[in-house]
Structure formats: C-alpha cells, structure tokens
Length: 132
View (cartoon, rainbow, N blue to C red):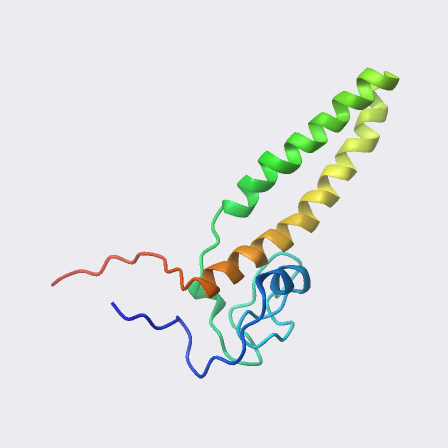
C-alpha cells in the first residue's frame, strides 16, 4: 500500500488542526474552503484541490458531543433545578436553545478538527479490493 495522501500536488506548510477546526481552513493550503454549508464539508478545496470526500469523520464528532455537551447541559439543568426550582417551562425555554446552539457550533468545530487530524496522521478508510 502506498504511503501517499489522498490528494495530488505538493504539500506546502500544513495548517495546525486547531486553526482548521476553529476557522474552517483547508488542512493543506490554509484557505477557508473546508465547508460548503454550516456543517457540510465541500467536496474538495477550491484553492489546492484536496479531495475532502476521501476523509471519513463518521459519527465520532456527534458521539463526542452527545457525551460531553449532553453531560454538561444535564448537570447545568440539575444544578438550576436544585438551586432555584423554576417551573418546567423555564427549563424548556433555557435548555432547548442552549443545546441547539451548543451542538451546532461544536459540531462544526469537532468535524473540522477530526478531518484535520486524519489529514495530518495520514488516516485512511479501509477499502476492500476484490482479488479477482
């Protein structure tokens, strides 16, 4: 198996995974071309041609957010309930928008960060080839 990346062309100075995650930059050229919409990756970088579809972040970012953000939001809701005991509608008014905003913001960052780490570590998705 080749050790080449799933892209073509020379590799200039790579961008730090934190910058890729926070700014939506291409991990190879550093241009802000990683996303086509808020949380959907572009097919490829418009500047350097890196094929983003060759990377598979899967459900890792969503699972991480369920565990981390879910736990933090539940802890905050329990703390509010035990300290103030507001009516149920106050919980709905607070925690539904807080959860939605936190998940949408963090999902974009976590997806970009995982893609950057896959690029940096030359991670590949296993593709079984028919020996015939």
